[in-house]
Length: 528
Image (tube, rainbow, N blue to C red; front, side, top):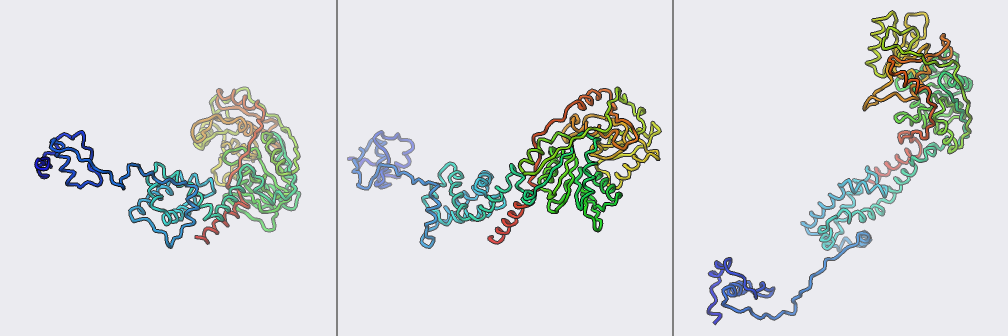
C-alpha cells in the first residue's frame, strides 16, 4: 500500500538532501498542494510511490507572455493625450526608480551635447531638463516604466522623447536661440555690421615695406578732414601720433587700455586697435600695420576694424602679405578698393659680419633687439659696464610715460644716450633714429618652446633702421652671433607670403547677436 509506506513529512524532510531525484518527477505543479508535493517528491526518491497522473487544468498556459514594446517617437503624443485627473501615477518604489533614471539622463554630458542639435543652449538646458523630468514622471505608465528600467540604454530611448517635449514646450526659446546662432555664423562676419554695410566706403591700401612713407601719407589725409580716427598696434605708437597731431595744431584725443586723454572740442582720436569704436561716424579712419590681421592672438581686432568702422574713407597701412584677404573682404562688403604701392626711401644693407658675440663692438645709433625682458636688462648692464655708451630701453610692459621718455631720449642727438636696447615692439611703426639693428638672438619663446623668429617679423624689425628723417644715410642690419647671420639673410630674401586667412572672434560681435542675446535672457527671466 503506497499510502502506508509513505514516511512522515518531518522525517522525509531530513532525508531530502541525501536522496536522488526520481527521473519521472518534474516539479510541483502550480495547482499542487505544497505539503502533498513534498510528500510525493520524497516518496518518489525512496521509490515508494508512483508519479501521479495530473490533469492539466483549463487555466494552465504553457506560452510565454511577450513584454510590451514602445516607440519613443510616439510617446510624447501619447503623453499629451493623458488625462491627469484620471491617470494613476506610479507606486512609490517605481516612482523613485524612474526618477533616478531620469536624473542620470538629464545630468549626462552626452544628453546636453546632443541637445545643441535642436538649439538648447547649456544655460537653458537645466530648466528644460527639470521640466521634462516632471512631465515624464507624471504621465508614465507601469508598463512603460518596466520597459525603460529593463532596456540596456535608457538614455538613447529617452532622447527622442526629450527632443519632442522641448520642441513643443519651449518653441519660442529655441527659436530665439536658433536665430542667435544663425546670425552669429562665423563664415559671414561682414554681416555682423549692418550699418557699415549700408555705407559705400572707400578703402585705400598703402602697400609697401617699412620705411616707405605709408603711414605718413595716411596721416596727412587723417589731419585734413573734419574728424577721424587712427588705430595703431601699440600704445606707444598711438601716443606718438597723438603728440605729433596735436603739435601740428589738430586737436586729437588719446584712447588706450591704460590711458584716456580727451581734449575739449577734439574731433580726432588716436587709439590702440582694440579700443576703436564701431558705433561712431568718421570721415577718415587709419588702420596701421594691417598685416597683423593674420595674428592668431590679436588679428581679430584688425578684422573687426576693417569690417565694422563707419568711415567714408579707410586707409590701410601694411606690407603686401594681406592684400589678397583685403580684396576678398572688399568684394564681400561691396567697398571700393584702391592700392597705392611704395618703396623704401633708404636702402637696407646687411653687414657682412656680425658683432662676433662681443658687445664692445656696439656703436652709436645701434638698436639691440632681444626677445625677453631678462636679456634686455642683461645687455643694457653689460654695454654700460664695458663700453662708454649709455642705453635706453623699450619693451611692451613699460609704463606709457616711461616708454615715451626713453624713445625721446634715444632720438635726441644732444645727450649721451646713443644706444637702444628693445624688444620686438620697435618693429611696430615706431619712429626711432636707428642706424643699425642688431639681433641679439633670432629665437624666441612662444609660450611652449624656443622657436625661430618668423621671417615676416625679422623683416619688419630690420626695416626700422635708417628711417625717413633719420640722420643716418642708410639702414644697416646684422646679428650679435655669427651663426645667426645666415638665417637673417635668408629671412630678408624671402618674398612676402600672401596670407589666405584673417582672424575673427565672437568677442567683437556687437550688433544683432548682442541684442538677440539680451532679449533671449530677458525672455528666460520673465518665463521662469
